[in-house]
Amino acid sequence: MATGNQENAIGLKQVWSWFISFVIRAAKEAKKLGEEDPRRVIHSFKVGLAITLVSLFYYFDFSYQGFGVNAMWAVMTVVVVFEFSVGATLGKGVNRAIATLLGGGLGVAAHRLASFAGEKIECVILGMSVFFIASAVTFFRFFPKMKARFDYGLLIFILTFCLITVSGYRDDEVIDMAQRRLSTILIGGCATVFICMLICPVWAGEDLHKYTASSIEKLSIFLEGFGRAYFQVANEKNQENNVASLDQYKSVLNSKGIEDSLVNFAKWEPRHGKFRYRQPWDQYLKIGTLARECAYKIDAINSYINSDVQSVIYIYLQTPVEIQKKIQEPCTKMSTECSYALRELAMGIKTMTCSLSADIHIVNAKASAKKLKSMLKNGLRPEIDLLEIIPTFTVASLLIEVVSCTVKIADCVHELGSKSKFKSPDPVKMKKQTSCKKLTRSPSIERSHSFSISIE
View 1 (cartoon, one colour):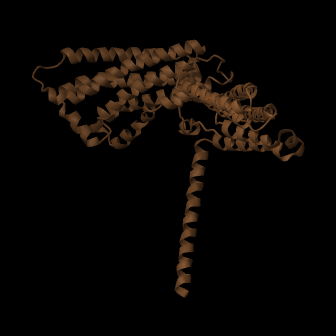
View 2 (view 1 turned 135 degrees about the vertical axis):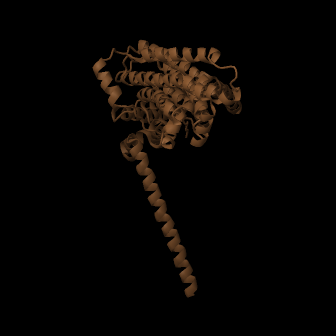
View 3 (view 1 turned 30 degrees about the vertical axis):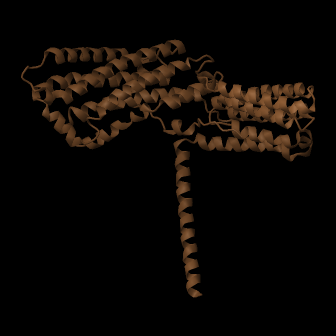
């Protein structure tokens, strides 16, 4: 008996220890999430406030007598519509309101038309209408443009139409039921939109703007450190730390999903801050595409220096010294000038000003690329073994392509500045910002926005 009690005590102690460790881990993770982006904590309180406000319709007798059980639809609307950003919330709110209105109206019309056919045929007509409407709307969801902006609305349309049509068969008060549900859904949607916009709003357009600038900045960080990591690798004492710091660009490789979502959300948002009503959001997608193209070139370059520092030294030292000296200067110049140009462009996007010196750096990079191309064609000795210089020549060729990508990014950023009416900067102020301050971005932009669609 004593042995059994001891085993139970040990088991309870182990369960308690596991529970305590679980709580500690959860608290640390919650603290980390809040520190990454304090807006998450504010968003959580905003959702709680909205649900509490609309639930009052269910608690008070005078409102419950008017809406009945349908008052719960207001709470359900807040739960499924309230998103992290204003654009995402407005998109879902407008989709839900229009879809509920159209679906409810069409459901009432189908019920009324079916009622004229007699009780026996009514259920057949209602069943056929549900089949054809649900099938047609589901097919519309496959259209790319419809799916991008109205997929949630199409789902709500199907849901509302089917609920009104099917439940109306057993309920003669179908119009009254539809009116109550529509009213409570509109109340929940309006409460959600007002709280989301008036209390510490999070603008998807602003996050997209910062995200684009940060992506370009990460490309410049790699190119800035590339010369030290590759061409001067034998002389660097802390080279492993330098190589480890060059991996920030990798987040740009998978940026398409969040950029597409942020652009979609931003298009729903009204004018705010420096962003006009018809802001050229699609231009950010073009910049993002070119940034990913440049990042893929950089990723190919990084394969030569990322795996092992000793292998990088071996590859570089296998190249004849004469070729090393000829290639090092233009390659270092290209990477440095492209880095400066990209940093200037990123700073220009962040401050919404036209870049002053990016074009100068691009001209210098193009001149170095032209010099290197001529050297690769005509400046080699015929007796050199090509196998010894292929790795170095590969890196040089990729750098030339990076210069070409940088030129395209600069053109696209200039076009964005023209469409968005970027201002001319103060040279003294911009010089201080460039020299004293680097762009920083928390990973919260990727992790804070939710892109999944939920439906009750």
